[in-house]
Image 1 (cartoon, helix red, strand yellow):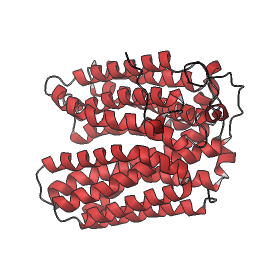
Image 2 (tube, rainbow, N blue to C red):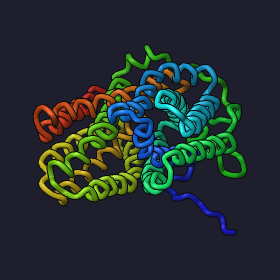
Image 3 (tube, helix red, strand yellow):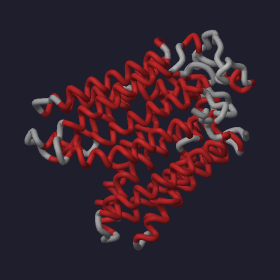
Image 4 (spheres, one colour):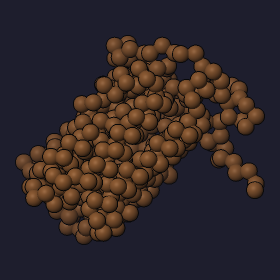
Length: 409
């Protein structure tokens, strides 16, 4: 068989980039399958819609509150071990959630899954930031996030079909995709003693297979206090808060309501809007990674935040399907940059090991995803869609402009 080579722009990236992208795809695929089933399964226990929504919130809330502990675990046992532990916790809790016989069981098990999710995410990000050189951090993040994005596109399509057959089956399938993710991580990720130094990756030092490997001495942990003194790290926190607030929060909550209640369009336009956004973001992820590494962290962080803010203004002014899709296209461009630049900045600040600093950075996104939907919902109820989206745009723009306080690249 002819040897299949990666595209030139991806050659030379650490092996971990592609392994973790595969892991991310498996996780996102399963998550997309189970998400539609969670509130419907909760309703089977005779609870209110508010209680059903609490099951969804429990996962996100426990991700947020367990972030610091997850970071300390990564610092103590290492990224690879923490990654496998986090995946195992989510897989087992999902399997047991599918076997739940009461609402409290389901609620607790989804919360436990959120803890495992936090550990897995922090470990994966910390590992990726450590093995990549400064000139590769944007590109490695774009590959990793591309796995999540692709799984997020494919998963919901399967999820809708599976829910029609059984409300328990999605939990079992999610456990299965997590088991596949753990298997891929356990078998394909290099052992700690075979991890690579960023400088060696950049110099191309390696074995006969062209993948550079070397024994790396233990690197000192970057304390959170030291990271917080850095204007760049604080800008990365603000940028990741903007990601959670806008991408995971406001967009996911407001756009479906906007389409049906404000624009008076059919529900099919919700899927169209999100599909267009996902496809545009997928196309732009790799160019965004190259821009972050080539143009610089500071300008791409600011540009990504301002594009996201502009798209929220566009959604506030949308009057039909054309303007809706245009605003979602601009949103995808901003999200591609915002999804990469803050992580690259954290990698620059943390350098070696910094599980706790990475955890706090991840918690900023989780906090934004909790605050965004609630704040937007209150503004919609008390004012209008336009006010909610314009206020959200101001918040995202303010976060982006904090990037101007960073030192120039």
